[in-house]
Amino acid sequence: MKLNSNILRKLTATLLTIAMVTNTMVMQGSLLSAGESTAGRIVDVELHEKGILTTRVVNMQGQPIAGETLTVHYQGKQIAASKSDENGFVVIGGLRPGVHTLSTPVAATACRLWSPTTAPPAAVGVPAVVSDPEIIRGQFGAVNLPMILYAGATAAALFVAFEAESSADDANDANAALRARVEALEAASP
Image (cartoon, rainbow, N blue to C red; front, side):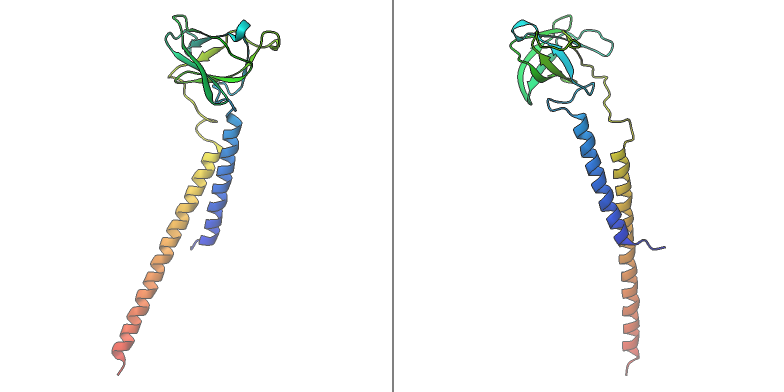
């Protein structure tokens, strides 16, 4: 049974387009303007007087990590950095309200910093940044829609390639048979 290569090409193009659009939508939904959050949400944090932020760097078990570098980013630019003390605490001053990213070499947490008088009741005073090399990041598990679409598009592309190769082989065989018939006729001609 011959596969129609035009249909397969259209299927491949459609699947790739859907996969790219879906993947873009997934990525836009999972990234925040200030950076990627480990929890996938922004944490409201109340600053102390004079824009002082106190945070704690911990591992997955909640144990403090000493000597870990914590950087603060605002609108994609690093504005401060400091190392955690023996109890995992980091104190950085001179910050203003707004969405910031608190990053370690292996993790990032998006925080909305508030001045002490304007912070919502749910705001925390000392946010924890989980920085553990054992953190395994994934997006919707091992199988997701873009992955399925990419796999389908790859399979369709392989079918198109095999169909094209098969068509080329058939054309070469027909050409060789025609050439043999022409040569036989030329030999038989007086």
